[in-house]
Image 1: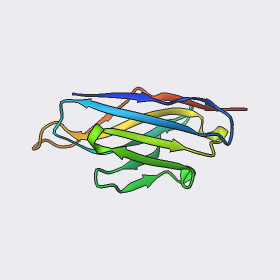
Image 2 (image 1 turned 90 degrees about the horizontal axis):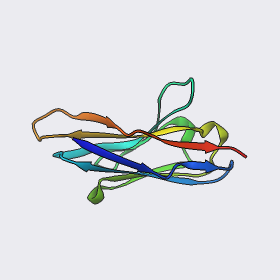
Image 3 (image 1 turned 90 degrees about the vertical axis):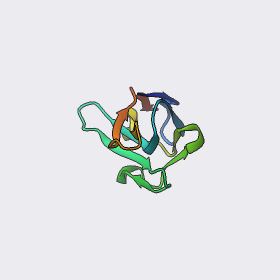
Image 4 (image 1 turned 45 degrees about the horizontal axis):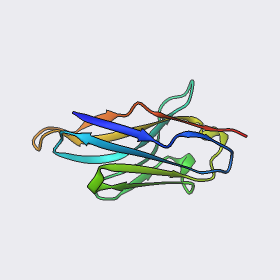
Length: 121
């Protein structure tokens, strides 16, 4: 079982910055991908940014150049630095982790409960 603790959301003005963090704990063999998705009211969940355990990254088109994902593998923690925030970035940001509970088991996906990010004057 995996537990995810998300933090860092809040209210910020356009052009401002926020930093999200998500720490994973629990019983598992390994953590593979870690990252963030977001969901705004009436919209589908979309990829924000994700990083593999090898350090490869993938970003949603709308955040490229503004957001940066990073992780501390020793602490099983993923971060999202969000700069130049826009009102359209307003959404619930959900932490996503892909892990193996045991070495021989297939990868599983796990989601955090989400943290609200609101960008407004």
